[in-house]
Image (tube, rainbow, N blue to C red; front, side, top):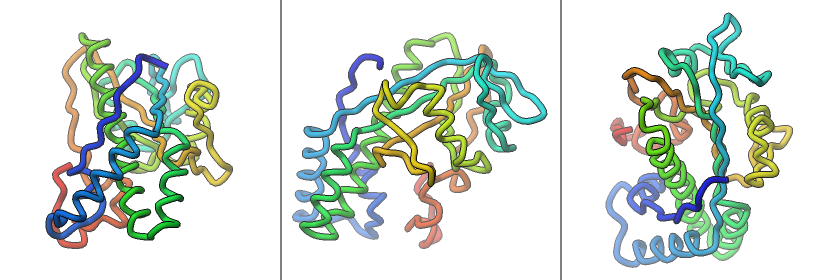
Length: 225
């Protein structure tokens, strides 16, 4: 695992996940901040990454030196123009699941807030890892990160990513037969690297894991992603 990262939750991001139509009131905001501090203090982020040369084949995007092939037109488009890719797994640890369950037992609304804050926490960790990678590979151009379940990249690639990275031993992340990651607040992703400028495009609703339940889409607006 690379150097440690200090977890700092983006409160505004978490509030967007909570689906507030208006800004939370003072009492709600104090509760949210208190829960965020608890997650920041008690969870332990862990992550692992590897960089692989990639080859485009008829079957998909092959990561050289592995048996892993990323299938689907979405990831093929995402990695167009790239010669290598970062494979990444990150988590905020099983402690996050424990905190969520504890808060759910206290109050269902508290549990929901905590779950959203934990989602924002792992997003924050991934953003920080991307920043560190950009510094480490400063001569490269990056795509944004692309996860199983985005577009038509199947979820069933998840356990193979975890295996290739050795994420079970190195980050404490495993995958159930039903393709759920444990701890639940974990992410796997691929980031394309290129020696020349590439079109990063826009993430958009089509590849967002929240698209099915997004309150912004229900109201006919976008979050700006």
